[in-house]
Image (cartoon, rainbow, N blue to C red; front, top):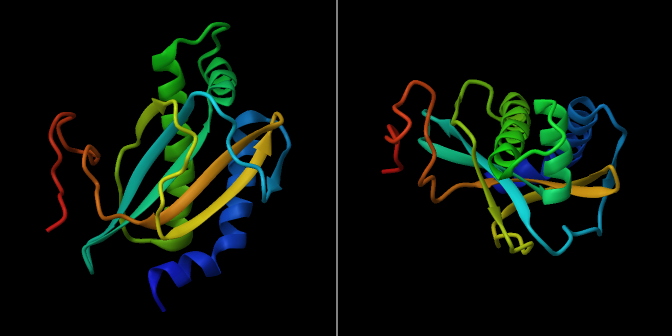
Length: 171
């Protein structure tokens, strides 16, 4: 079975995972959505890689949402009424870390998880990748979780490595 088939087979579990993580992190009800896309405007995303040292493959986990959701999340996580841009990145990075840890437990048990890399962009268009994307709504806004094989892990760091140094790179 290919990795894409494995991700597709796990689609319902990934959807349930996203709903559970959002419900837990926001203390709000989250519901699956199928056709809703991210709204136009600033998008805050987090990406991490799961490294399988046996076959030297990387599975990428990406979480994307609107700056609105990121602001609410940062406000609640950091207990501040007016979170700044770095706070939004920290909050969505942590959301990605939580989701990534759950994806690792679901699909890649004995593998290594990178640290999250968060960024804010103005482009709501998702990258064209072979993988699985599930969406859920929380607070009336969409959050996307995408799992795919990673060809590029540039910029990611790994626990135990210097913050400016990438210890593992694909061959």
